[in-house]
Length: 228
Image (cartoon, rainbow, N blue to C red; front, side, top):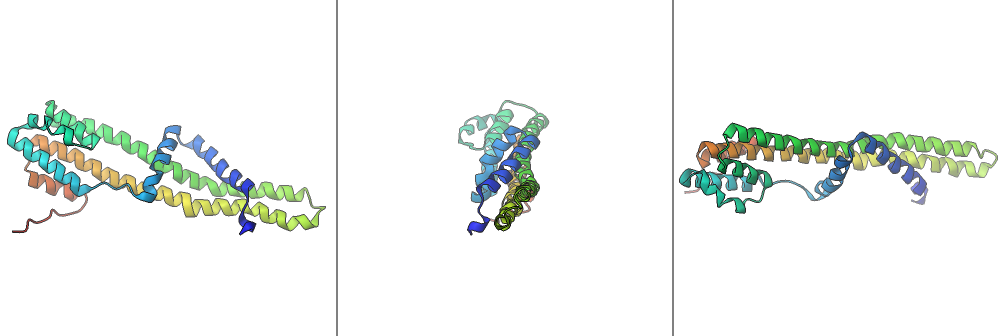
C-alpha cells in the first residue's frame, strides 16, 4: 500500500487539476459545485408529489375565493420560486408575463447549476493530463540520477504514482461526481417546470385535478386514483 502513496504526486495532480479548472470555470461556479457536493452523496431530489399537492391546494383556494385569497397562503409556501410566482399572481400580473419572469429565474439557476457540474467534469478531465505531467517530471528527476542504480527502480515507481492518481481520481471519483450532479440538475429542471406550469394554471383557473395531471405528466407519472 505504501508503494502507491505519494504526497508530492497528490499535490501535483490534484493541485494542478484544480488550478486548471479554476482558469476554465468561474469562481462562483466552483463555490456552488463545492456546496452541491453533499447532494451527490446524500441525494438532492425534490418531492414531486408534495409539490403537486401544494399547487393543487393553492389552485383550489384560488378557484373558490379568488387569486387574492392566496395572499394568506404565501407564508405556508416553502419553495422560493413557487412563493415568488404566487406573489406575482396575487399582484395581478398577466400569466404570460409571470411565465417569462419565472423562465428567466429558472434559466439563471440552471445555468449556474450546469457550470457547477462542469467544474467537477473538467476537474476530472484535467487529472489524467496532470498525472502524466507529474510522471514525466518524476522521470526527469530519475534521469538526473542515473549514476545511482539503486535509486532508479524506486524513482520510476514514484514517478508513475502521479499517473495512477490522475487516472483513478478522474475515472473513479471526479467524473462520476460530475455525471451524478448532471442527473440532479436534470431532476431540478423538471421540478422547476412543474412550478412554472402550476403557477400559470392557477392563474387561468384550471381545475386542481387537471393541474395535478399536467404536473405529473412532466415526470411521466399518473395521478393516484381515489379509492371509493
